Each structure stands twice: as structure tokens, then as C-alpha cells.
Length: 101
Image (tube, helix red, strand yellow):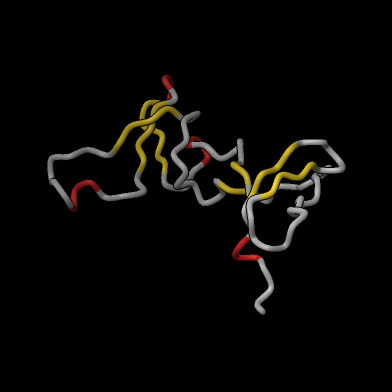
């Protein structure tokens, strides 16, 4: 999953445009009056984002990835290996991945 760059306040169903000439609106995701009757809705610019947009996350297409590098030893000890595809060194402990004996 990755962030959808098209998801912003301006196209969020919880957002209401209140000052069109400045592209300012109010987020109606939560009701601030339930906490304090004098509190106002949060104002934001239509280009801002918060992560509450229903389409905030989108599926990421994975391409050109390297397979996981496993340590040379199978005793669960820390081991340094090198990816045969990218050459990066990987140091990991795989105790939890050892087969049960």
C-alpha cells in the first residue's frame, strides 16, 4: 500500500468548501461540538491531507524487487549475506524462521 497523491481535502467527502476564493474549507470528519459547543470545525486548504480520506491508501505495484537474502547458516545466528541481484549486504537474525526440531 502507498499514499494516494490524489487524495486530499478538496476531494474528501468529509470536507466542505467554506471560502471558495481562498480554497479554504472545513473538515467534518469529527464533530467538535460533541466535545465543546463553542469549538469550530478544523479549517484546511483543499490541497492539504490528513490520512482520514477514504481513498488515502492505494495498492502499490511492486516491480524490480530483489528476493529476500537468507543467512548462510541455519543455526539462527546473526549472519551477513549479499543479495545476488543488487549486491547489498544484509545482516539479520532469523531465529524465529528456523524449522522446529
